[in-house]
Length: 440
Image (cartoon, rainbow, N blue to C red; front, side, top):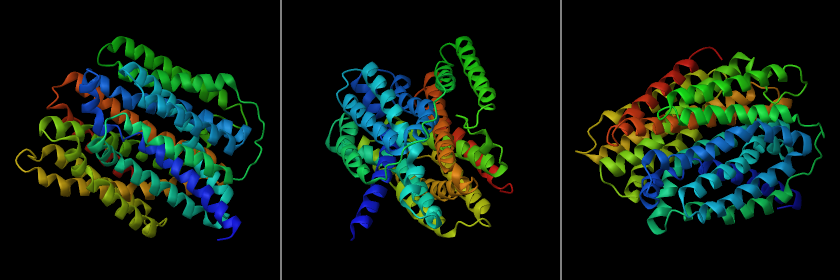
């Protein structure tokens, strides 16, 4: 292998490994939530904050990190984000209480935002333009597989170690990414000054919306006030950005009907996905009495089938087949989530295996095809902004799914909340499928 080919391979490995890490950490903790709640002596709703804090940091920092990358250079911001993510992982692993862990997870999310928002833009610097579609397929495949594999990986770690190791395993991988990232081409950014007011409005708006949603069950009036303030903040940001040549919110892409529908469908699908992967571990461990390892093994067919489906979708995806593949994937995922809720699993737990396989098959078909459609519907010069919005859609859906489960855990008995969450996820996934049937 020539030096240039070796450098290209290292650069690609750096970006994809970083993406795998940040997506994995959004779901690897799910299967450990019952264990965390027990060890830290907190309620199920409080334990779910460990997931929400990470996703809040990601959502709040995603667009600002994309803008920083354009201003100061993609590689520089990417490496800074991976450094922060790795350091925060060490803080998570050493957390003595829930407050420490939630704070460290939020910081970890801030670092993860840089890696997630700049991944596709960095791949474009090392891959020829005519192979951009292939790079987008890699990106979508890593996201689909890693999102689904998180609970299984978490269960395997918990089978031989305690929960802090869920975060400690990030350390060697984070160091590898930083070393391999040196092979990425160095390019100066535009040095365009970042609008601090727009960044504050962005982070404040998304932060207030998530905070309001989290407190909706315990303090509904206060929550509505907080969410209204968040909505006002984002509205002001949109109007302010309309006057800028390089807006923080890439509204020009959302004006494209095909991109907007893909993004909306992605949000709906990931609400179902996020709620399902939080509900299932509680359902299996609390209601059915399974161990974390057993619960993880029951969920393992999800990522395995997602891998098969992602491979098929990558080969079958064409402009003429996009709507059909996305709608089929959502229908299968919706059917699987509904079956997981309605089927009498206590009498025959093994029947969960084909149900989870159905979920994985549907998830892989939809995500790879929908992500590919979203990226290719944006101009090449706007790939960075498209990547930020694609990640924002995914994270908004995941965060909403987790918040739905937090509200359900606070309002319903622990035996009932997971099954209700699975039904809600099934309905929203079905909505994503209906959106996908419209002309793209």
